[in-house]
Amino acid sequence: MGRSSSKRSLQFWLLLAASVLLSAMVISLFLEIMKVMVYLLLVLLLVPLVYLLLKRSLPFLRGSDAKLKSRN
Image (cartoon, rainbow, N blue to C red):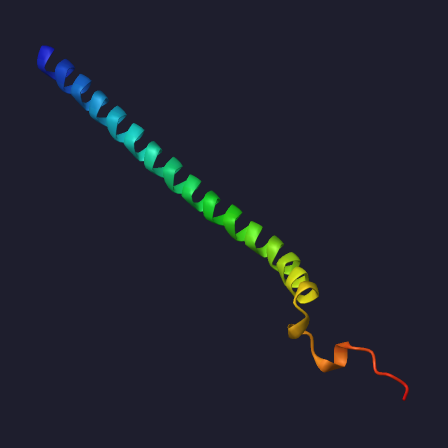
């Protein structure tokens, strides 16, 4: 009876340690995925703003059709 009890106790602690390690790995993976998703979302939100800012601030990037034509 003592041997099966210690075997059961050892099995419990091994399963507990394995479940803690697996849970930590799953949480770590989830946080990495969330970090990448937030980064991509911020990039997608900032791209139009940076594009418009660069388009307005750099005159040599404007095409000739962007300027108003004179009536001479």
